[in-house]
Amino acid sequence: MSLAVVYTRAQLGVGAPLVTVETHLSNGLPGFTIVGLPETAVKESKDRVRSALLNSHFDFPQRRITVNLAPADLPKEGGRYDLAIALAILAASEQIPGQALAEYEFVGELGLSGDLRRIRGAIPAAIACGEAKRALVVPRLNSTEAALCRNTEVLVASNLLSVCAHLHKREALETPVKSVAHDAFYPTDMSDVKGQLQARRALEVAASGGHNLLFFGPPGTGKSMLASRLPTIMPPLRESEALEVAAVKSVANQSAASNWLSRPFRSPHHTASAIALVGGGSNPRPGEISLAHNGVLFLDELPEFPRQVLEVLREPLESGHICISRASAQVEYPAKFQLIAAMNPCPCGFNGDATDRCRCTPQQISRYRNKISGPLLDRIDLQVHVGILPLQDLQQKPEGEKSLSIRKRVISTRKIQMARQGKINAELNGKELAKFCQLGEKENQLLATALTRLNLSARAYDRILRVARTLADMANEEHISIAQISEALGYRNLDRGNIEQFPQTHAHDTQGA
Image 1: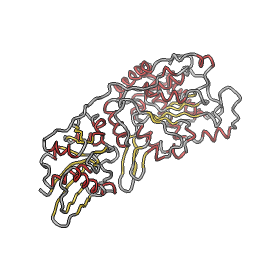
Image 2: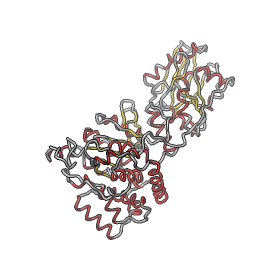
Image 3: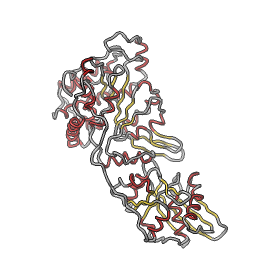
Image 4: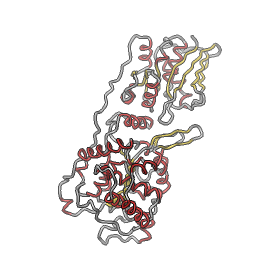
């Protein structure tokens, strides 16, 4: 047989489209040609494949070899096609049986010795292969992450010889153990936090409804510490959500198997570029917002980020995905993240801390705050002041409520939302807000008065309703009350236009979180 067909998978965004490797051996001067829109690394595979075949003691056909990677209009990159090309050549030259190849898909880069090397994007390939009802053969270094896909039969190979022995039915390839963690694990806990009852309450509200949150206050008050503990009170990822997160990590060439049910927490430095946040490059890769998918994106020192970098977050915050267009292809990455940010109230950081340390002028404070645009601030549901702790609170041992007990309340609150509307409150659209967030006459009057005085936008109005709905769910109340509207309005501190004084107390400062 001079024609052989082998199946493999490309990598496009977090998808893995099928690629058919067609190999034909014909008479004529010996040559090796790869067609089907291959980039440089794919073109170089003919040298890797030739050396791997010879060093594995196979015969390299001294004929004209044509390899077609179909579909021809899909760009092919990387060394992931090496194994499939080598097997297609062996099948076309009748050195391995070709009848069983249709039951498998193969991905893997070949070393010159015939050993198989790790590829990126093994999890999307495993997911797509399982949907096609085929078995996937992967390099041993990809076995742990590929095994996360329970619905896919995964076979592990160390080298080209072991794959050929399996196809000859002489020695079967290993099947990796499909072990899955039963719960998320975090090295931090909310009980580490001293005081800050208002901020702890805001964290629970944010976790319960999936709301975005901004902490502002003097340096050293625990804003970053609080933000880093948000994932510890969020519900563990469902396996379908965890697989989405693992797929993004796999595409980004990061380890995806360790503690895979934990919520991602990404904290890029303020010198990060727009491409680092949203993804991109000549060969597009996922950025920080996609690596934070189904988790938390924490932006510390928010005004220190360049304004044009912050503005790229506006669309993903609304849509939950990011589309990157290039001349060769258009890819879409998931970006359903919860934004948590922290900032100082002024350039020196001490405005509103009840001391005389701040020497910033109103113009400097205004310029500092205006680095954050109104449209971006509108998309942040909770804006909470974090004040300086009294000395007696600092000297006490941390004895706050543990994350586990808070997480149980958060899970109960989310169950109420899922039973009522099938989604968390932060995802409610306009029609659903009108249906599930109906207000009485007094509540409507209070909200209308507040919107007029604070000069809030329509988007801010919707977000206040979503937060109030979450507060009602936390209290296990069917209808939104005046108390919940008032508390939701209290979380819009930066909308009030008061840049010189920030509130030092809150209704929940004297209550438990």
